[in-house]
Image (tube, rainbow, N blue to C red; front, top):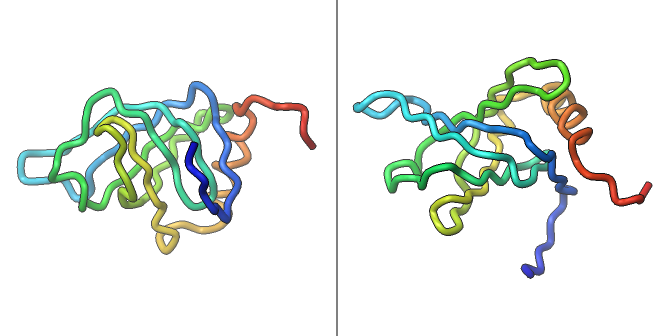
Length: 121
């Protein structure tokens, strides 16, 4: 297991689908990659993808599209790929300059409800 020094608590919103959209689209047209959220925090999100990422995607700006589980409101989060594991699992860091704290509060509030509770708190 990795020994990480994270400043933000991560949680796993079970069953939450996410879509990665390359922004702006490459010359061949818009690329959308479907996946499932593995875990997330106020600073980033890890997504397990249904298909591998291409090399051209690694340095691209992108949007993460999620439909909030309770309100069914669609949310788009801007970010960059931070790391890739086995080409099907990637960690993305949010571009915090493009979002308000209220937007992240709403996202986290709804998504944390999907996380399994382990009896703490």
